[in-house]
Length: 214
Picture (cartoon, rainbow, N blue to C red):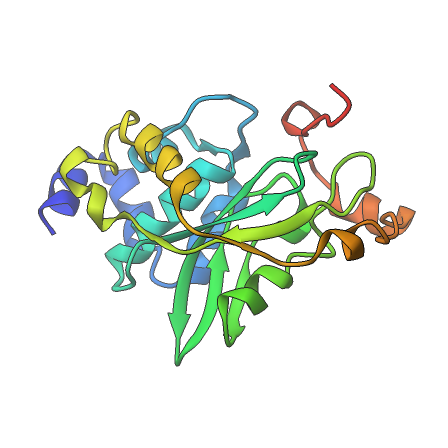
């Protein structure tokens, strides 16, 4: 736990109080929900997320993985993969009694927390399917990666430095990818209805929305 000891020595009293309050996955999610969504194209390490109160989905998942590790879970992330017309979406995973759950930061209401009730990672990934859409109302989720354990990046100080997040992002591009539905089925998908579309974008920052036509 030397990495966390160094991290906590860098914190102000107020920051240490916030971290000490993240005692379960739901509280980690609540912290992410309370901070601003980042439209930036760079990464913030967990220490910077805590200090700047800002994160996009990648930053948020890495922060959540660090916070979950602090309370006894392995720091696992999983990348949800779209059809090329949307952003990827990163989750921090946790497991309770053999069932998977997730913590996530998102610009969309439906792409955040999942209770640990899913028997497999495929079940968990599919729970995001109906809420995973772009601004042209296309349902875009097509696959997911295997889980990545961030322990392997400890020597790079990924909790307190931004630079290792580039290494983590590259590694998510290299690991095994699993398809969720065949192309023929994807071609028959209906667009998202108006009510669901508006609900999912409640509170969204327009600057952070993927624009598939550009």
